[in-house]
Length: 114
Image (cartoon, rainbow, N blue to C red; front, side):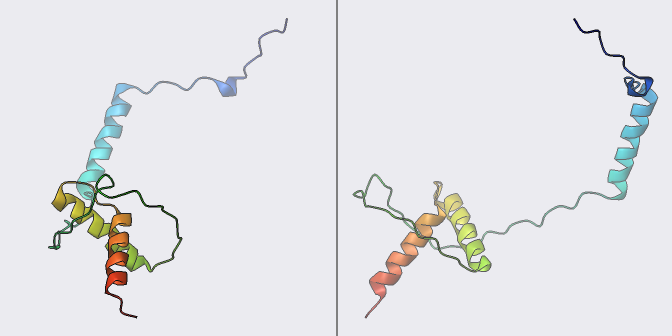
């Protein structure tokens, strides 16, 4: 059997923090918050969006689906994300970014006159 290892004095267990040190630490943290209060984010003002109806998957017949990776400008991606969020809040049910993009493409191709 092996003997227990000898622990050098440099590896001793650190001392515990006394109550006064802990109180000083907490006091300094509170003082920092008074000097530099946390910055609050600007309130989000929802824009008025026309109501949009989406058919649920249960209402429509199953359609074969595929994937297409498309790179879009960041500003457009943010608009899609914000619109999906606002429509979800207004309708009271989830509206996904995919549903928005699909509806926009369907409307585009139905109105396209070639």
